[in-house]
Length: 531
Ligand SMILES: [Zn+2]
Image (cartoon, rainbow, N blue to C red; front, side, top):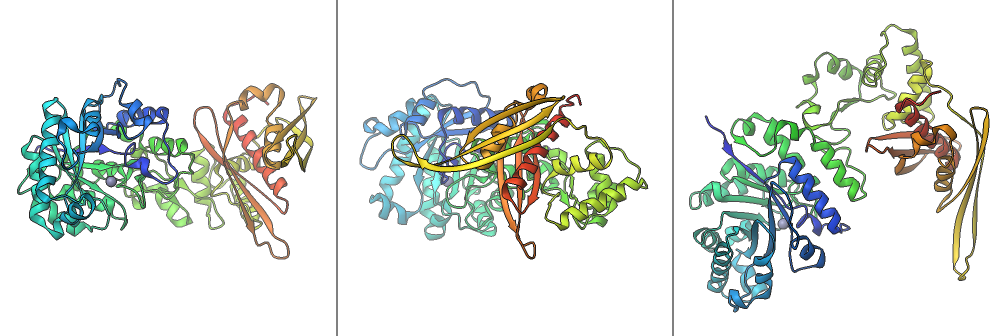
């Protein structure tokens, strides 16, 4: 049986931009549009031309995208003609391949929010779609509050949808704007709509307020809708939009959908999904959700020893899809529950071959257990584990020695009489018999220490120049008589690769220092720096 085409519509740059704390620049928007295009998304909704400066600029320029670049905006205002509505004119004149109008489809909203008649709402839909189609644009109509509207007044909700369809709109998008609909309701209502408008012209736009936006989108596809709208990482106001990062692999890898539908994302593009998801988080300066389905760092992580030995033999025993299909990787956690098989599997992954009966494996396991007992957390700190393993197996060169460091914190009035706190760090390192002293000021003691430590490492400087710290987490552990501090530092190199290191001490500066040192040494090992 021939597979049907199912289209993906991304609204990260429009609905996703409504997220609290998200403020895309023009540069961000262009970069994200390119990333979505590279991923094979069919439609990229760029924003709302005329509503703000960024979006107006975005739609003023030409882009070279394979995706259908879509402008979003309102249908003509009630009581105006299409030629006498500046908002509609800006939308129709925007440099866009398609126009997505949003219109009310819930009679209650038409009366209360628009304060107009149901007939005028339908006329506004017809006039706006006709005007945009007349300009040669592909047209979509977002039926706002469609599912709530359908429950209240199915005739009117359907009349809004068919008004646009009859005027030549390519897609009628059914929106669960409040996000409260459930999958069985979506399936039933979409099923009723596709009896009137062909499913090849029906889309679904779901919000995640009951955490079922993904399920609702899939339910709509099962019922006949052939366009799914969503955002990367489920970005969007309140609880977010349907998460395309979960929907795409489900459509590609689960036979129920993969056997029925073709989407624009190829197998090769699917392998870049995890990277795209993390890149967006990086642009937003957010820590990626490690428990995100398919792409999270923990999505294919296994802890207990017996599971690990089974996974080594046959991955399908504990994995619903192969991690590399989405660009993720299998991770066997090294923890105090770890058995030998975990350790060997993890060593294998980082490229250290060792026989399972090698006495050093048992020793490494003992060291891991001892250190985890005093607060180290290797399952969260892959790079520190690798260094520890290489050390126990005698494989880490002593690149440099930190002979001493000194960190001070000072509070004083600055030149304009404002109270400020500054930190100064001085670090004395020995590289190749030569002593180097560096000092740096930072906004805090750890920042100052980090800057001083990385300022001058002699012949190793070129290896660490692309190193940046991307996350710093502190946790106070209850260590019996006195509390100890665990610091986790996430670093990134010039190629975008990330790793995490750990330090533990009663003193937060010391714990941070250990984690910083591990990060630098790890980078030197990874780059093959000469000893
Ligand atoms: Zn929305």
